[in-house]
Image (cartoon, rainbow, N blue to C red; front, side):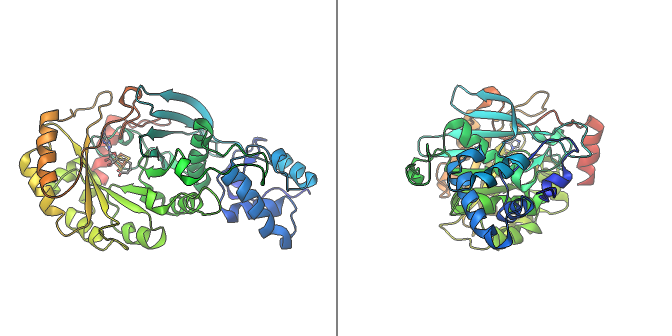
Length: 399
Ligand code: SAH
Ligand code: SF4
């Protein structure tokens, strides 16, 4: 077989001899890769199903272990492809068990250096949440967010988004210890460590709609990674036109980074508000497909000392959300170097939470996790590209 593999990422990868990884590909991507490896058309669906299971149910990292694939095909696959994950630049473990990985992605043609992203695993008694990135950096410049100080380097490919889940499963031992299709024990979903995925890492996922959607399709595929869509949450700063589309096409849970109850303040904190003000955002939320008391939207509200934490604002928040099946998540501000904000005092947070509680929203405060390793919400940032102070100001004005 002499034809070059035709998978999308290969065309965009640098001209180096590095082989393309199949880890993270969609079914279509895998099909293209197998066709390029010489698998005849009529065998393609069957081979895709075989590899899909090895890759996404077993988490294999070598073609050699695929016992129901002929040795000849395994060799051909091995000559053209790998099952490599992104390279781990660093892995940090917090005193609370939170883990953060800095990952280096494969460089693409035009890139001077390989981009880096962060992924965080947060273990809790009743669940394990993986917080994944959707972009390298972010085009938006929310004034309290560390990622917002970094320019957008690029969107992540679907496979780079899925690969974060696979890498985390590798590192925390969340694949079944299987030897073959019949003698291996499949982990029942109740024993899985990663039970929830949140798109709350670096980037604005609705600005990378197609790739994030394809990636969540792989994550929720019942014959593969099999995460429930009810346990996948996309968090957006409020890209209003994409919200109904996301609900219709991807149908995951939704979180909105609200952070303010009036436009003047939200314009400052979340500059995309200048384009899509609160009233439009609320309207999109009210109409989110599938919304019900069993499927509520989470509203995130970062607690910034003296900025948005008054009791009047707590009452305004409750009023703003009335009639929307909602959860409220008060996020204690997580500081990062040189930020101008401070986290509200605990007393203030408690009083704010009490108002929210009394209005019927249970346990609204999100416990900060992994702060000691800068893994908490809004602390993620890689050195892929920094924004200068003047670029930040220009970005805020543009939004
Ligand atoms: N771009 C998306 C998802 C990533 S941010 C969004 O903005 O929704 C995930 C959450 O962390 C958002 O609610 C964001 O506003 C919040 N966040 C950002 N910086 C923070 C910080 N320093 N402390 C606490 N939360 C922060
Ligand atoms: Fe981007 Fe979200 Fe950070 Fe705003 S809060 S800068 S949208 S990552």
